[in-house]
Image 1 (spheres, chains in turn cyan, yellow):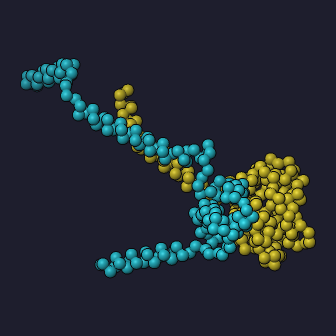
Image 2 (cartoon, rainbow over the protein chains, first blue to last red; image 1 turned 90 degrees about the vertical axis):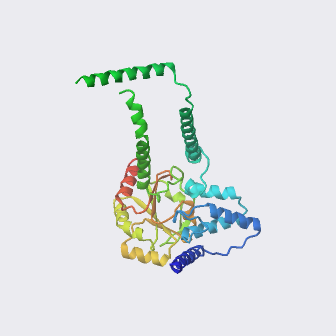
Image 3 (cartoon, rainbow over the protein chains, first blue to last red; image 1 turned 30 degrees about the vertical axis):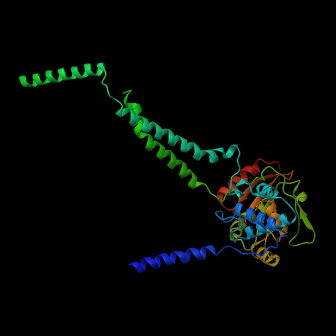
Length: 165
Length: 179
């Protein structure tokens, strides 16, 4: 039993280890460490549109390769990170960005989770408050005592009625 | 009666929220994530000047002007291009000007492909390394752009033109354009 568990865990580790090593490798020569950093940052943040759940850095698709080369070329020409992002968005739209831009169309996307969180907080507070008021009754109002008395006398009436049968 | 209704609504609230959420997710499932709207719609066709597949000379974005034109991005390695080829040929026969953009293809392969299946293109420009396709926001073949007389991109079809949905959509946009 224990060895089966061990084998399973081992298989999982091997499977995931293989997965990691699948990232494509190309050799680009960079003028400076800053440029290299920019290159990795950009290719990490841009989506490969062919294989949509991968970024440009990880994908083996032809287009991702072309885009990596494009990023490299633009950086070598001295273009800034913002210029390159702008270049991509002009061609492929906001969808190419893994981090969606902050603008009226995406407000719901950015604020949605916070709004839902506060709605949740509101209901929790309301629930806790209603729990509290239940235990706080320490005096029965005169009005209620009167009603209870009335109910009692009504019940007595019914009992008397049933006795008569 | 007046007292029952709010509490009934309150009790049904989880069900209502569940149905609303389920409906929202169901709509999400029917959308095709491959259809990324192009930011180029309504903008002038990106600049390019490319060599031709069959003749000497070149074809540029300026040559697109003056006539409603389809720019069809295709390659001999692209399976869906074969799928849409009959439709492209039919469109060409019906008098639509179709320019081919041969995307990341070997010229010899492209020529053989056309010899076998027929050539519907008035002109074929060659984008050998796919650099111009990036300017056009192409992320896979086939893709087809509808360009109006003034050289403005009016519509983009992602995937084969032979799909009824794609074809109908293209036709409806095309019918609004001045010939």
